[in-house]
Image (cartoon, rainbow, N blue to C red; front, side, top):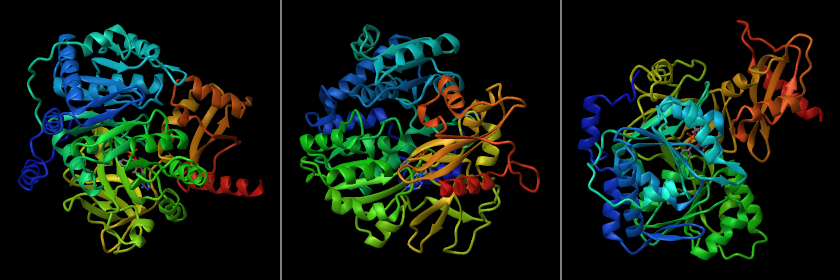
Length: 539
Ligand code: OOB
């Protein structure tokens, strides 16, 4: 089972020759930024404010502390932290120690954490104590008990973590920039989330270009409103793009308009990124806010489709420029450019970062279409991509990789798109079995498996139901076992009780006698969606 599918040697050589991969690690990046801007603010939390020199020193200490605790280069460490400054010092500490962060989201629960630790063979978990009503430390300790590779749990705010953070800095060998830097999580469409191996070289290229495309400068101030472990607030341009530019990141503990607007005013925030439902909430709140939002220059919106109507309201309501972003943890990120005409900014999800991001729009009805199977220009098709920062394979997932990538290394994104002559993409739908719940991705099969574990469930099928606010919500269709009558409330409680992120608990449950089937006898999710639409009309 391969950890990492490398780029073909010749392709890698080209990416280097063209200056995309520069042989720099994240640790080295922080060193150079801290040398250039030692006294500038790097990170602002609720109770503290660190300069680049301060962040640099903290990361050095944590790296040394990790090494002293026996964490070795190449080992994986699950990081589950909310938007607090320690997220940044811990991640850079791990990078300097040569260890690989595995980025769990604060929303993840026992079931997901167990999977990430087990799948990656993690040596440690770094988390927080009780936060927003959930005891992260308790869950991490329970996972550590059951996953044999996990030797340590470090909890921010406890003496164990304080020891780590107080270690005396020492020289550690810089890891290989072409090696895997961390494991990001896929939104997934089958079973449990796959792990995505990203290298220093490839990720730093996307960070550097994202910072440039989004106009970040040392005097920019970035607000991280979404959970920072996610690829969008982390690197598009996110915390890392801001850091690369020598700009400050303000960490919002919550993304609501009240919290965000307070921080925008107090810190003179110039740029932030949000998912469409949050953009809608900010637009609404802006009409009656007393906060001064005049510093805000750019708002990135992405993670899910930003409809034209919402796109048109953002600029006027918030007094800023809209930048649409369409990206994925697997790699490809597209942005509308700040100098694009309105028509493209409002009506597309942007064009790729790199001139060498290869995009193919192929026949949408064949899930295994080859990269040569392109639809005529301007028609809707399935998006395939490969390029200097798009992975060639998931971590330890050979079987899945065989269908998730084409033979010539294109990633099958599962997104249905239309390409404009300018290269801008319009996202028009999805061919993958995934529900995009306002930017939070739910793999239908993962939820179906949880439902099927219930003794009164014979079969389950999870589909998207259109939702005005979130874009989509989840609906679980369930066929009960003979002679049983499980209720929607029971089944939702059951899924929640299996320790999954709350956003995966089905919003709606419909108990039915049998599923409609396709010609070959498979459950027809298309018909289920039609039935759901009819039901919505009746109400
Ligand atoms: C971002 O990354 P993921 O890995 O959580 O999700 C990727 C998927 C895409 O394949 C697409 O289905 C959907 O999310 N998506 C969008 C979108 N941006 C992402 N669908 C429609 N319109 C958009 N603007 O979500 C992500 C990663 C980096 C930057 C931004 C988003």
